[in-house]
Length: 155
Length: 155
DNA sequence: AAGTAAATTGACGTTGACGTAAACTTCGTG
DNA sequence: CACGAAGTTTACGTCAACGTCAATTTACTT
Image 1 (cartoon, each protein chain N blue to C red):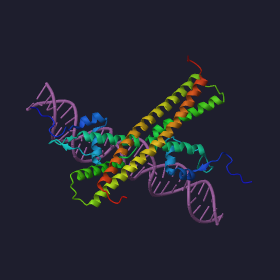
Image 2 (cartoon, chains in turn yellow, green, cyan, orange; image 1 turned 90 degrees about the vertical axis):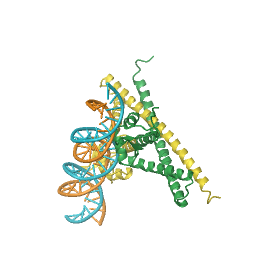
Image 3 (cartoon, rainbow over the protein chains, first blue to last red; image 1 turned 180 degrees about the vertical axis):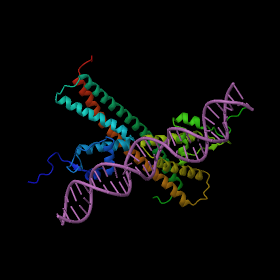
């Protein structure tokens, strides 16, 4: 029987690169600065990723393109998410070994980060919307202007 | 009589810098790459700006911060706006000397640029909104999580 | 087994968007 | 008018975010 993916469906660099439209250099750079480490390596050293890595990368790209966040800022967000992930797992396994205070603080700090993020995005959306409005009006004026000045090939 | 601003209220670098929260270097750099030229100079060579320059700069900053546009892209937008400005003036003064075809083409191209811009902004707003939604949900989950796990100092 | 496309590390190069230092000039106030 | 703060040009420095080249290895196909 030909088994093909014993350890949870990993994919290589080429697949990641193709799906996300980035270069392998970018991928390695992101690893360099601690943005995302491959889930594993082949015996030969080739990087292996999984679906959750793809999701994280998509998130990185969106934060970058849509919010203009620096990779440093994005790393902060990612780290907080990782922290929360660990925290949740911690709680699920009732591994209440760690200091309760510490855990509460970690959770609080994650919540603050999320609140900040949402606030930032709200303000950007607000700003963008008002800009869009302004440009839309200019566009409409220009179109009216055109149809006034050039009453040409129109039915 | 002490006249003070014979030629339409110009202001210096310091005032611009203070109002916009940027450095003078940035201002000079923007001039270097053709983003905004001062409206005049003092006899001694000091740069002078006016209110419309401030408005343009504010626009530049917003495009940069909110859309993550490069200065190059912003310059394209600015150039198109300048073009339209000239075009409008041209029409107002009925200086219909230029080729009608040319003017129509210029106007068309400006309209296309505006349409592109509005579309770009729509897509960004869309993307941002959906991200905001996702983060908002995570935030709410985390808050619920916290109040479940730590039923402490609450009335 | 052998060949070839693709991946790896290491290193230096590049581009955009300014920062910064130096040498000098101009402006506004006492 | 003197003088210190702020402005000017010239030029080199910097930092992020990759690009690119070279030498070597690995992975897959035939």
